[in-house]
Each structure stands twice: as C-alpha cells, then as structure tokens.
Image (cartoon, rainbow, N blue to C red):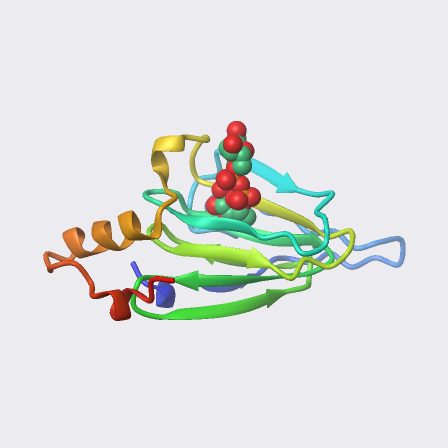
Amino acid sequence: MSIADCRLIDLPRITDPQGNLTFIQSKEQVPFAIERVYYIYDIPGGSKRGGHAHKGLHQLIVPLSGSFDIMIDDGRATTTFHLNRPFRGLYVCPLIWREIDNFSSGSVCMVVASNAYDEDDYYRDYKDFTAALSTSAGEGPLSRAQARLP
Ligand code: T46
C-alpha cells in the first residue's frame, strides 16, 4: 500500500433548492464494506488529530462541515490534501500514517470505516510503523532520513 492507493472520492450530490443531499453506500461509493462511522467535532483551534497508522483499516474521511488538512505518509513519500467540501472525501488505505490539522472553526470530520474500533489495529509510534513497513517489504529498516523521523 502506498499514498498512490489513496485518492479523493467525489460522492453523489442530489441538489435541491431546499438543500443538497449526499449519500455513501457500502462498497459503492467506497471500495470497502462499511462497519463503523464516527465523527470529530467541537475541535478547538490549533488541534492536531491522527498521528498514527492503521494496520488493516480502510477509511473515507469527509469534511461534513468546514475544512482541514490531512497529511498522508507511506514511509517513503508524503502528500497533503485540503478537504473543504462535504461531497468529497479522502480514501485512506491501510498502512498509511496520517496527521490532521488546520481545522476551521466549527468543522466536523466524519470517518466511514471498514472495521469496528480495535486499539490493536493502530501503529501509534512512527518507528513501529516504519519497522512494520520494512518487514512487510522484506527489507531492512528504513534509515532515519528515509523514514523522515522527527
Ligand atoms: C483518523 C482520524 C480522522 C473509540 O473508542 N472508538 C472509535 O471508533 C475511535 C475512532 C476512537 N475511540 C477512542 C480511542 C482513543 O482513546 O477515542 C480516542 C481517540 O481516538 P483516535 O486516536 O483514533 O482519534 P483521532 O481523531 O486522532 O483519529 C481518528 C482515526 O482513528 C484516524 O484513523 O484518520 O480520526
């Protein structure tokens, strides 16, 4: 898995003068079966979320309201997306480190996920994440520079 496997997904929009509607159906708008939905709200200015990777979780991250930035990192390259439309989400595959910040006032971050919550699915230490990548690639550990450790 790499950041090339992550992508923006444009969701359907039913536009109406009385208000627009967007929907997400399991395995249709997202490339996985949906098992969990959660959302982050009441986010104080300057907050940072994420700072971890998931071992097996697939996610679609949607800015239901407002905007924020997501940096994704596969241990070799990083890229940052600014999400600011409730009909456009970022699909994040397993084994991607993410950091989320620059939340606008009143923003709401919704995540549609492929599995129930499981703390054992997290890499919360960047060194553990890069070590797991090296193991799965059958290589030695990435150097500090390669892994861009802080
Ligand atoms: C991501 C961003 C956008 C639960 O008990 N159940 C849950 O379903 C979740 C997601 C979390 N929790 C508990 C576990 C921690 O004690 O809530 C606490 C914070 O969870 P987490 O560190 O996952 O929160 P974020 O906002 O840093 O990250 C979450 C996702 O895990 C992450 O993949 O991209 O939202």
